[in-house]
Image (cartoon, rainbow, N blue to C red; front, side, top):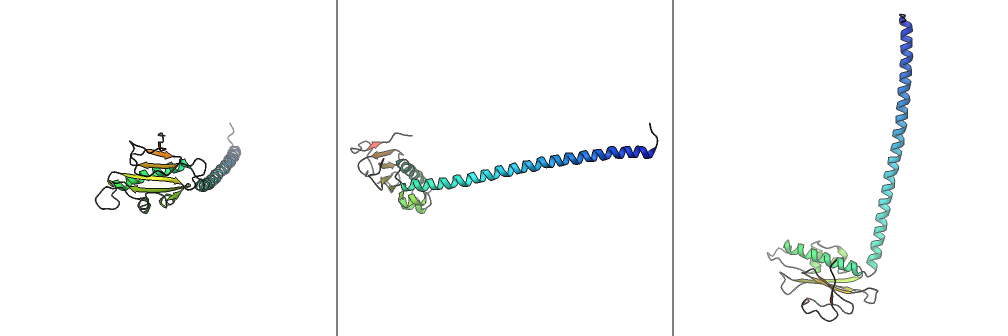
Length: 192
């Protein structure tokens, strides 16, 4: 064992210097890994954002195309939306008269219970109407007639407080329907 203090300090400093160099190299390596990870993370986030914006744009464009053509499936969705809105209107007594009753399409739109195009009466290539039935507390009906009846797959549609959907390939359905005695050419659409 060397008792010379100057030599032991030098060797300690040398070991210490190597240790510091090793620590610096380790930190540099870890810093590069972190920077690389951040670059990858930022790239992934940018890709997700671009995909999200792109898909939103294409969904918007698809929605415009859907509104421009007649779609019985979309019209059925509109009738179901009217049914939900009628229930909300009635149970919330939106007109504030103390009577739980149904209402018209325009009134559903005025209260914000259905979206603008549908509330306006024309959406997805169909003309919509909704009315309270003879007993406004318990009955309502709605129809969806194709704007262009000659368009492929066009159907005249009808629903009421029962939630059943009826269709005709030939003529508009006049409501309210007597479901026990359907008019000729009017059929019940099977449940989904």
